[in-house]
Image 1 (cartoon, rainbow, N blue to C red):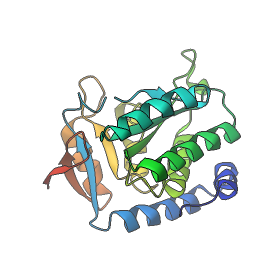
Image 2: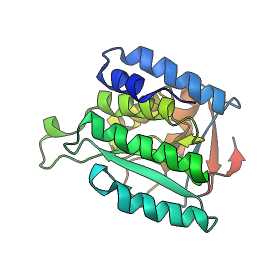
Image 3: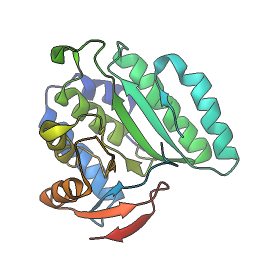
Length: 211
């Protein structure tokens, strides 16, 4: 059983970022003791799943439940940082955890930071917020095997956040995509620099090749 709703809310409000990272990393190591972090090169089948947020919980969860009943596995993606409250974030995480207990159909969870409504960098979700949300998701959703780092950010700063995410509960770095500012070699390098072994996977999170 993961941490409680009350504990998760306390974590989201905590200033102890390093402590959160250590706790989330402990969950990752428990679930993935092999010391491997994954990525995917081709993601056409993976890119099913829609972004879901506090305003669309019921409709999207119903779609996932239907897919699970058909024997399909899906990825839950939570959009955050779009003006929702911390309570709304927890409502969503609780709904995902309950459906996973019911169906076991989620293969992964991805917290996705919302883009700023304008071009002002100050209005975007900060790296600290991304890492905090990732850590809380890993600790709360310990019944979902994989948690993917938010790969929206690009360039050098984005790669640094992805590397740090591997010590905040993430065991997957998402897809290598043209124009994303990150190559396959970039992902393999930051995984190795984190002390883990890189492994390519398929859309169902099955490892294909471990370096």
